[in-house]
Image (cartoon, rainbow, N blue to C red; front, side, top):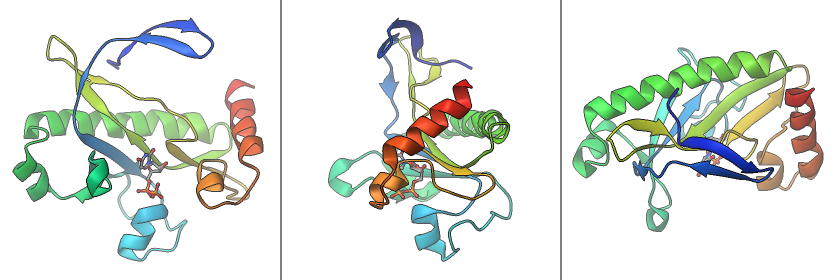
Length: 171
Ligand code: UDP
C-alpha cells in the first residue's frame, strides 16, 4: 500500500511525504449508519445488500462537504476516471484488511473515511489516519458505539470508548 508515511518522529508526530490531495473524501460502508441512514431510510445497523458501498464527498467547507454523484465528479473534474477507479479499489482493499483486523478484536467496522493525493512523481498515495475519529466501530457483541459518534451525539464515555479501542488493538 503506497501512503504518505515516511517515519515516526515522536509518539505524537510523523514525517510524511507532501501530497497534492484530491478534493474528495472516500467513505466506505459495510452497514448503514449516519448520513446514509438519513439519506436512504435504512435504520442504523442495517447490513448493506452488496457491501462495501463507496461514496464520494466534495471537500469544500463552504458547501458543507456534499455527497457527489458521478455526474458531479465529472463536472467538477476533481479526479479523473482512472484515478477514481484506482483510489476506489484501494479504499475497498483497505476495507477488507481493516474489517478482518477489527473483527478479530470484536469490533464491527461500520464505515470509515479515507483521503488520497498524488506525490511529486504523480503517484497516488493514501494520505490519512485510521482512528475512531474517522471510523465507526461497534462492539460485535453489544453493538455499543466505540467511536466519535459518542461525542457527536453527546452520549458521554468518549475517552473510555477510545481507550477500549486502543486496548483491543494493542492488547
Ligand atoms: N467521516 C469523517 N470525516 C468527515 C465525514 C465523515 O471521518 O468529514 C467519517 C465518519 O466518522 C464515518 C463515515 O465517515 O465513519 C461516514 O460518515 P457519515 O457520512 O455518516 O456522516 P456523519 O455521521 O459523520 O455526519
